[in-house]
Length: 287
Ligand code: E4P
Image 1 (tube, protein in one colour):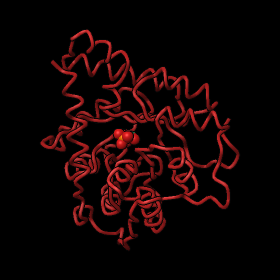
Image 2 (cartoon, protein in one colour):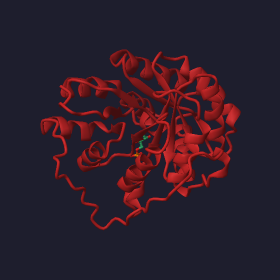
Image 3 (tube, protein in one colour):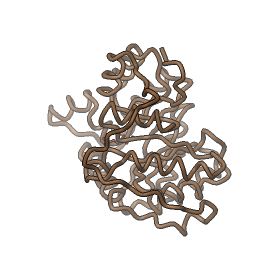
Image 4 (spheres, helix red, strand yellow):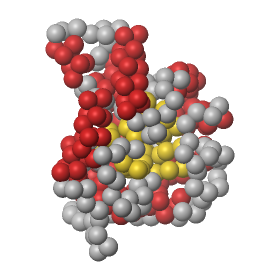
């Protein structure tokens, strides 16, 4: 059962419907799920297929993704399921948008994941005008989060998520949790139309700290949700302090949210690396 006082929605980060079922059984609730090309490529049925030396054609792999997403959606009909478009460094906005529109029709509770790159933001801006719900992924900076805010201005609350990837910042020695705190503080000056979805969660402490900070949503892998469930769904205490260890602090920037999204510095090398990795993992499945 959901702990009393927990306002943050808890999502599972994964590409296997069996895990969705297990997470619901274990926690007694689940508010949504995020998927991505890498997670789909790790689905046990896909792995079996690949281990036999087989590959998919593009139609087959998309049909598989659709099937996975439908199964997940049926288990959490009141929640949200994030479905990610294929986007490599040369995919233009119109091709991302076309995929997003198709995927949005797969299930009634989809959020479409576009990368927080120039083309991804262009696609999202148009997607919001066409009343799609979006989840802007691979966000690594406050400026990128400000650009998401600008590109989706006019959207209603619930239609836009931004996913800052904390684990990947930690991996290179920066305190990813600071980015969550900084974006929440910056959005506190805005109209509240973008919700912060803490992603790339690697530890139970990430989850507890994101709850403490007031992240709107957290997506965590099954292993972390399992650990949280087995410990009895603990909540951060009033005196909870996140230990950042040797990670370098990410300072808050005073950013004006009223600018056009194109005016922000949206480049981040980890966004580029992330797009390369997602597209490579997807392409590895295709013959
Ligand atoms: C979720 O939406 C993200 O794609 C996911 O949390 C990324 O996690 P990773 O950095 O562990 O790959």
